[in-house]
Length: 245
Length: 245
Image (tube, rainbow over all chains, first blue to last red; front, side):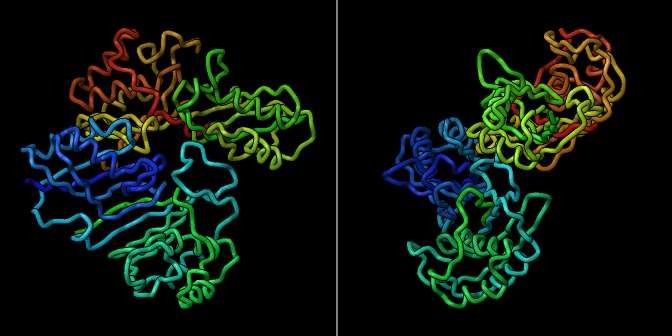
């Protein structure tokens, strides 16, 4: 048996999310079926992060175990050939020790949330970003983001369906950067709660719109109450951009 | 009658190109039908550049004449509402003098050609860039590009279907910039021949692959013979990025 680490890019639009679902296509199923076609084996693929429906990845990390002898490069090429026509691409593949685990060995996860701040609808980027038609104050959003950085109980910013155990997380980075009509929110942490990035971005957007103050964000955080969440941003703009080990 | 100048973004994938066609959807038709729905008038929309099937635009300029009194901002909003579900977005709309013409007043056009240079297929970017799996030498491509800059007879780089009159054009800019796996070719001129950017990029790619030298590009240019074209790059990677007046 050889364990392979994969770096995977995918377009989340047609998927119910990373994780296998009974009711629709998933990235995991697409990759597991490709791996089965390549190896003839029942292969399980595990990822660093189980992204939601409609969420994308530029560099998701994953791993799989293969019995059949195969070189990493050939496996990558064969997976890419077999995963078509799903919008999933294996960017890199390497052998790793048997105790390397894409999810449990992961020590850092990074997301980027993309907002397009303009009146006009999206064309080529539909489903790949969140369009906000009203003017957003990115400086105010950046100030509010600083309230959330650090170790906190993020219950307010956590889906009621979250199975992540403790609601306490340490947010290492939450930066807001505007370039023209585009606003990117960069988030990094060892791990995130379910919907945490989208919930944080939703509240930052309220601040950007002038409907919430920085203090409203602090109050919502300190309330530790999901009912105090202002807004959950849509999945469209969320991109898993990297994992560290 | 009021003449309005439009700035239009579109995803070229579902279209037969800018220009109205009998055999399939076009950007022009989508906008003209939206304008008809808004005004009740038979409106003709003229663009700075008539892009081919599968070619995209970030800032196409166009104009249209409207009899009905309407403010520019309301017209923009109404066009965006009516052009759905086509992936076309009117980014800006302003009144211009009656003699302002999107095509004939245009003094400069700029394109960007996007190459993704990697083994893995494209996922979210499928149809929006040209994937070249073999390693490209971007420095060699940049050197070859400099041969093409200036005033030349571009017959070699012109579609046999080109209706542009003289094959002589002045290419003001042809820059090749690599950032990681991405290579962008920036082209600017007063006007381009049909397929000129794609034909130039195709030959630059041959240089990047080591199959052509810089001298081969010079020879092809000087031959003034379409049969000497090395390769026409696919439309996927071509973006109209701006027009100047």
